[in-house]
Image 1 (spheres, rainbow, N blue to C red):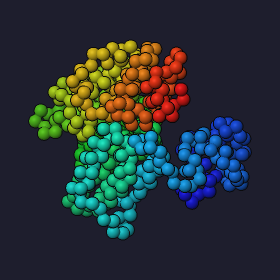
Image 2: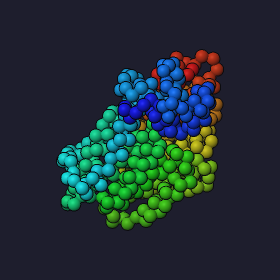
Image 3: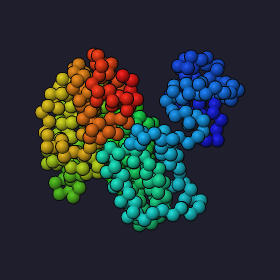
Image 4: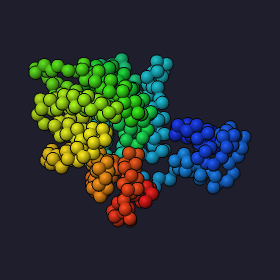
Length: 410
């Protein structure tokens, strides 16, 4: 995008923010005709004050509009910034599989090295180190795509496809965290097709979970519910002699929990109860919290989702009561991303019952545990804004400091 004129860059980012020219013009206090002329290059942007105002409305760094490299601020190092999102997007736009039909595929790292890199990326995600992950994802995507193409007609083709399917899922999960829901959906959808080539039903099943999560983030709750429940039904019915029984239980259970969250968004409390009950039975059969296929599934995660679903249904009181009865040991054993995510859910629950002090405490707990899960997520910004708005007088120093670091107005 560096070679594009500034008007084209404005049009690009306006499109990314899903704004019509009229909405964009209204927020700038300009006419739609003015915006159209700027984007077509008929009218020059020769005042820096106007460029800065446009950048503010579009929520992008002004350097991006000017076609310059963005200087990353220290406080954004643990988040995924706009430059990194564009690098991930560029990696997703590659079609090495098609190129392999016409020319030799580029060299790629050995699959053993790729396996280690993918496992490290999963752990980086589950420890909520989103900035670190973002700086490695573009290369990991390119390497995994190249490996998948290079091994298309070899005995290693399924292993290479399996790794690429995982990388797409990691990208989908990370992008969803920072509000890039369309890209998240694209990466998850890619993972389904690749997972089928890998011949792993469970990898395809958890890819469907990622698709359901992206759809839910996009506001498509009913399609999310359908995809989660449909695939869970296909995995139902376990043979006790099955060597991958625990893995199946984990994937099956997470699909049900994701379906419950979609049902809660719709307001279907009966379906929420049914799906969580099914997930609870799977967790009991599993016997404890596990991390098969990077699911963190087990009895504790079922309880976390039960509380989160209550919040989605607007029943904050039930959610905070569940929090006060949670299995402390099981919760402490969970990975940082999952625990910090739960603190954010419970902060929403406390806000729903009007206890802004406890909501603030939950946000601070989440921030101490996994700062990126709180500071990088648009949802956390919304919750913090709500807490500040409802706080009487001056907010406590720790929450005011967090708000300042997150760029949320006090």
